Length: 177
Image 1: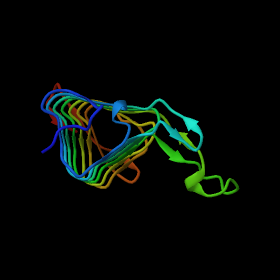
Image 2: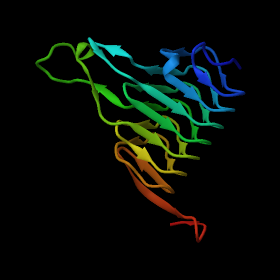
Image 3: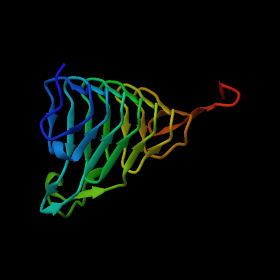
Image 4: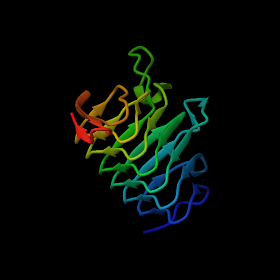
């Protein structure tokens, strides 16, 4: 286990396992006791193709991120306290432009599709993708391999590509329906 890179706003007992690729660490804030395992690529983008951005990644306390996390933003990604991301999770608030008449896709401007907010105590399954503009309420569960393209309220269990609601938890009755 290793500590966070220089410049990252990090609480106590934050561990980020090498190797990792973290750029613009000053745009990232991580809460206490959070763990990010090997192979993470975290990239808040300040400038691309002549455009300037003010990205922020805010990760709560007591979070866990499995190997090979990919997190990329030009605006804002927020992850609530106690959330768990399995291995190879992809999360991005933007995409490259894809105008067929504007030249190479890799050189086209980045398009912001909306900030991403993951609530407290969420679980994101293996190889899931959270796409631009998605908000997941507290205690959501995202199944393995899901592609989440729309928002879901608290206590939702979603799965599929695109993800759809499978069950909801009733905190009063204490059952999944």
